[in-house]
Image: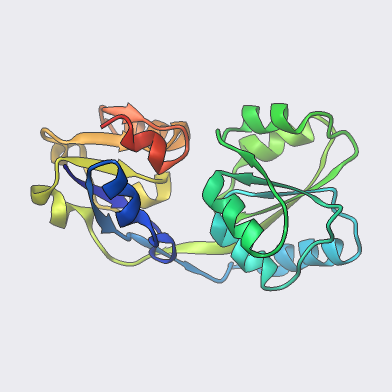
Length: 226
């Protein structure tokens, strides 16, 4: 089937091939692009701590976060790196570093996965979209958090509604991409509407949408549902 998928403009590589492996055609609608963070100081603070070997754990929630941070500095080999999903981990590997992969992205899963973080300094390179649940869960375990937006997301002006007559399903890859897509409950009609993960699903449901399925944080987990 033809499936519309929201994807960051810089992160569309390989999407068409992935969908074909599952027997589907991807109609990519890039509702967002990345830009420099509004305030670069937290990112440079994180880089300074990395330079002085004062970061114990680095968390990357996207491959773009890896790209933006590693353009400035590469951490030493003793820093534990944890990536959300295989694509982010591959970006770390391409930079010559090793990374652990956490498949399910939620504050609870992260806190449980990292184990004892009391007294550890954890850097998070992410999009300029706050995640107080994640930082709060780690702080509650005694970690010191350096929360550093590595990029912000801005609208491309592209509207997913323009392609809906040609597709049978829609996958939203983030709450932000949905908010910028122009999609409303009345557009759902007979479409299969999916969210890439629980946080995105919550946003869609809050807007009155009924979902066909919810993935586990990756496009692959969505594609097996359609």
